[in-house]
Length: 323
View 1 (cartoon, rainbow, N blue to C red):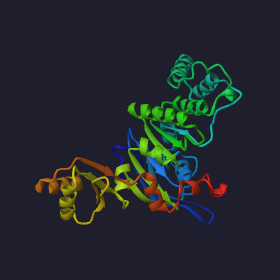
View 2 (cartoon, helix red, strand yellow; view 1 turned 45 degrees about the vertical axis):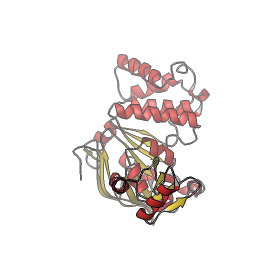
View 3 (cartoon, rainbow, N blue to C red; view 1 turned 90 degrees about the horizontal axis):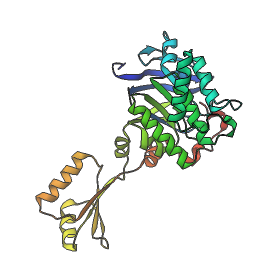
């Protein structure tokens, strides 16, 4: 297990509920100070993974270290190093935002002066100063999620598990949460993010793992995953038909667009393949007016690897939503 720079390292993680296998031997390696995103449809095992890694439930098999602590022999060390923001807000509606934060500070046994200082700092950091003295029941969805995450940060965790943190938020609130995540990572915090929003993983994640029926079916950066899916191409646009003809005769299997004076050349978008293409064009002194790279997006990746659409994710049986 690679642990020197790993915030989370798991091998052979397994979990079943009765005769239903939820996790079927997954391996994970999350580097410190990065965002790692676990993608999967409802029932794929995302929330179960978070619950195991955050000591909420036990795995049936596997070895795990979180923040340098063994999950089995040092669970208290793991709990002291992590924060968890689940799918459902842990905010107490009867308390104000400030009181929620002070309550968390008490639970972390902070000194009185530190309690007040950290609460004030978090209210400012999450743009909740004006709402701090108001009951949480009056907060919008975006404000509640910001307060929920602020409560997670009271204990200054090294690793934060964000389990579908922007579900139900409007686009503006979602982007606000994205910026908060980026700021946390810039400060050295490690984020383990589960999400059904493919755009969210594309925007935030340094590495992505795709979970399907309890197995990791692919892992890599967003660009690496996109290059695995057919459909990537380079579009070449020329100044005149002669340039199109010359390039087409040399490149072979291409698609021609006569109206746009352009060719579509199959390409995985990697630096090596692009350099090869450019060298071939340059070797024949073929002038290209415009070159653009087109790769499949994460929607295409998700469909190809799991066979599930984003719409079908939301229509699955509610009883497996939290597994």
